[in-house]
Length: 141
Image (tube, rainbow, N blue to C red; front, side, top):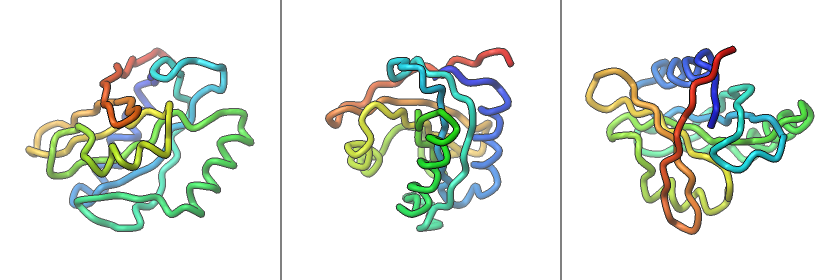
């Protein structure tokens, strides 16, 4: 995913607001037909983790539908679902892999907070249970 530094900073800031629980949201990308992993991020949409848990996240289906409709009205599309891992490195858990089956072609951005150091941000495509890391390319505004 191509993403400007302020949007990447917003993802990390969201994760740091509640370092005890997983946070979540979606990233809107330009609807230009770019293949997964090559889309340009245009906006971060925060969501509420209905579980408020350090071990899992879920966006309320009604909230997700509202976000999806808003993103579509803006002429963009959902390019990534993001969340944090507060106790482990930023790699998809089996729960993430299972959930990704409902979102083919959407990247999974994970902000890792484990270890107390600087947050680590990674992105993945998950297709048919297979995890492939894709680069996050920081672009100039």
